[in-house]
Structure formats: structure tokens, C-alpha cells
Length: 212
Image 1 (spheres, one colour):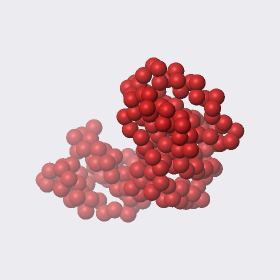
Image 2: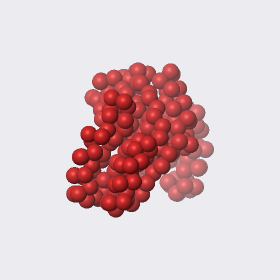
Image 3: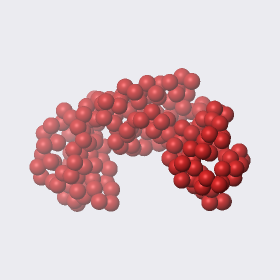
Image 4: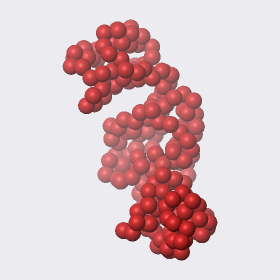
């Protein structure tokens, strides 16, 4: 791989919308090459080499199988989630295990635990105030994310063996300036956690993808 191609791949990864437009023939290569030179991808005397690289660049098309799975995804929305980001402590994890009995999943309660290498994150309904305040007082809370919403995306089972679905959705959300605070997977389900200000836009985008 030439240095120009290497830098080009980096630029297209940074601006995925450019790649999508190139795939569809919506971008003039010479104009794009001029812009990329301004961005430092190549030197001004490498214009023709950059255009040639753009011409032979191997764009990855979205497989029909992936698009078909997206058309059959089920979308659910739940509001009023709090994310608690704690410093990792053994005592905290043990305490959280005891709280599971207080969660009624049959009634739709939200309670998820993610144990990382340095932190423990708890996803819980904002209505569980006693649990939230008790844990916050007794353990080292690094950050609390309020007014979060949960979007559940349930794919057909075949999605587990299909590459690129999460990457495809992530690109779409990036293109539309949507900020995802947290993302969890329990294949074939994908859970997105985002500020309420981004919820309507994200929900509408997902519906549009499913319908087209």
C-alpha cells in the first residue's frame, strides 16, 4: 500500500460521508483531490497520483444480506435511564448482586451491569432513587449520566453471523451528528444509550433505514 493510499484510507475513515458519495459517483475526483491536498493527504505536486488512487480505490459495498437484516430489525424506545459510572471495587460488585432481586424484569425494569478493567457501570431506571442514592453514597461515583434514553434494536438471529451491521449503523449516526453515550450488545440485540436531545432524530433515522 502506497503512502498516498494509506493517508487516503485515513481521510475516508474520518469522513465516511465522502466515501458514500464516491461510491455513488456524486463527487468529482479532481475537486476531491484538491480538497484532500489541502487536508495534507498528499502534496500539491501529487495531484494526478491522488486522482489515480481515487479511481482505483476499492470501495466496500454494503452486502444485500446486511441491508435485508436491517429492514427486519425491531426498534423499541425507553426513556428515563440513569447511568452510574463507579470506580471498580469488589464490594460494589458484591452489593450489586444483591440488588438483582429488587428488579422486576417482567414489569420492564432496567438494570444492567458492566464491569470493566477500571470501572463499573450500572444502567438503571431513574425511578429507582433509593438504590441510586444508596450506591452513590457508599461507593466512589465518578460520573452520573442523567436523562438518558435507551433504544433497543433487535435483529434477526442471522445477524450474529453477519459482518458490519454495527459499523454500518454507527456510520449513519455519525453522518447525522448523533452522539451515542454508551452502546451494549447482547446479540442479536443492540442497545444504544443517548441523551434525550438525540433520541427523536436517532429513532427516525433507524425507522428510515428499516423502511428503505
